[in-house]
Image 1 (cartoon, rainbow, N blue to C red):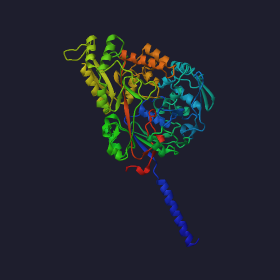
Image 2 (cartoon, rainbow, N blue to C red):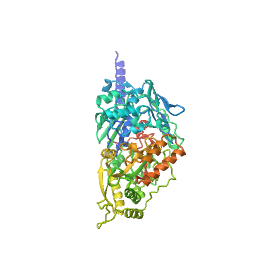
Image 3 (cartoon, rainbow, N blue to C red):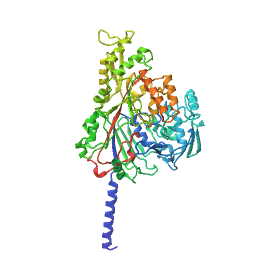
Image 4 (cartoon, one colour):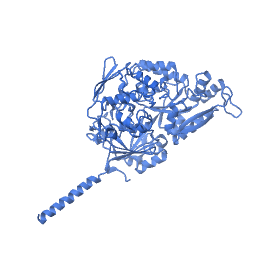
Length: 597
């Protein structure tokens, strides 16, 4: 070889080395996110908190989901090949699965990936009725599937569920086709099957790692866009792209708004996901979260109410942040905060006239507007109706009979025997001390809520004690009917009023019925409403339920919070979705706009 060709070859090798080095050095697109409270574990049959829901939606997949940009929200296929075929009488749903979808490789599959089938969904839905799990989500399918309740009843007696027992309502036509036979018409089944407790888990994974509230939580294996790469409980979660996820291309139409047009221009035609790694930190303190976002250490940030003045003025982003390219996505969340008193508690529970009077007096003594102002800095919309805006069945004209009136509250307590002693505090009608325990979360907003509620109780001469708990313990105590009173927050699982009225349904005590209310009349109305489509007739039943909840003093409706999501200039394609917990697979990171880290 001549010297000339040696030089050319050396130059080519040098160029190739530089090229491959540059490719190797290309940074992995990473999104950094914060949870304001710790996750509770990643078994979708058991987890029920909002923050864990972010992760389970990323790892596991439902049959259906929602269009990213469509408003109002639009149900679309996810792992299903199409929306369900529904019989004329609404009693049979036929669902077909896309072929070739894979669970992420795992030791449970001998290190390989395994194809998703409809049998995985049937297995997963049966798990909701396994008495060893005590799933809070059983109510999603209870009373709806032919034969499923009978299987659940046998499992309750035996203490374990026979997963191999057939259920007539789950007819597997072939590995990719399922026909569901209902006990009655259910117009919301498609939306229920878009809710993350109905995702597919693999039986091999559950049996390998344990079907209890322990091992299965720590080893989530799904078919979703991401897989769990690292988990330090209550501190740090890392997700990485699931490389065997079926190929998808970003292709959403939007509603023709300027915001949607900008997002479409940024994202159209890209493969999903563009973000390969999600790093989540748990940070309880408001100020710490805000400083992290300001420093550029966080890409996407939920600006909760206490922090709102730092970034929001009159509902708009502060000019200095807008000038830096910070983005704001803002909406009234389809959620509700209401105040409840435990109907099974010996102090505040029961249905005697004096107990109802006590709860109603407390309800009207509380200034909801003051709470919104002091705790959430005005970032909430006061509500009278138990169904929030953005959800089918919401009635903005409804007026609650429980309106703020502390003078009337005191007269009501006087009339029903809650007398003030020499120390100024009221006693029970039998003369025993009256102390009400208000439970709140242990972060800053929980402290503020307790202060506002103490002012309410002081104004009517009732002593209040405050118990602060981490979210996981609070939820467990609530399901056991051990929490005496608190602010209860519920975000829409699906955008229909049924999802909110079920919070007051007797059979959902120990599931989602936090006040532990069991009233035969409310239960009758709710059961009747389940057989109806969204209609004036169904709305009339919801109105009756709402009014009776007030008459019993079971709860006082508070507000829906405003969601302010901040994104760094480097985040492309972001828009907060009303129902989906997170939108990570739909967005991108512009490496050229990343802040120094």
